[in-house]
Image (cartoon, rainbow, N blue to C red; front, top):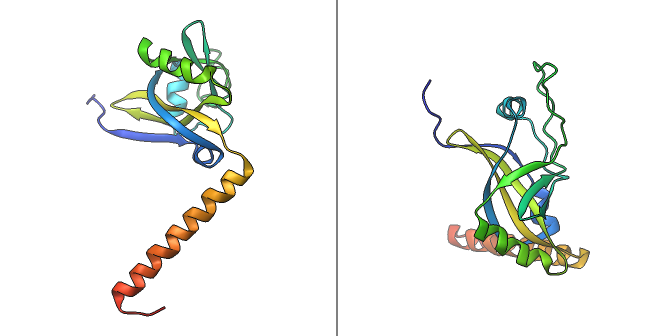
Length: 159
């Protein structure tokens, strides 16, 4: 069998970019069982409730739902179990320094296969207040309107 190349996105947490201010992002390997890998290859996972935790110098991913493999037997995995993330020691130390600060947390952004290996992109994030969300939406709309006006001007239309 040929070795897999490229990146295949399984799940992404689009809501995280809206609810949190992302500061640093990291790519981590993830420790999985066989049926979890088969379920992920079928393209099934949910990151919306997921978060990370640093415990005894190790990073754990909690709340991520990988459904049971349909063709699995008694060796099937538990859908919401804790999964260990594989990171370099220096990355874990940087993360834990940020996590100690008030209001910071680890949030999974996407789950994907990179060259045949399961990876998760996690971010050190700080929760946004509702007024920050409104401000971000207003800025995005203003930018979109400005780009549309520039586009109309370039095409020779006034409005």
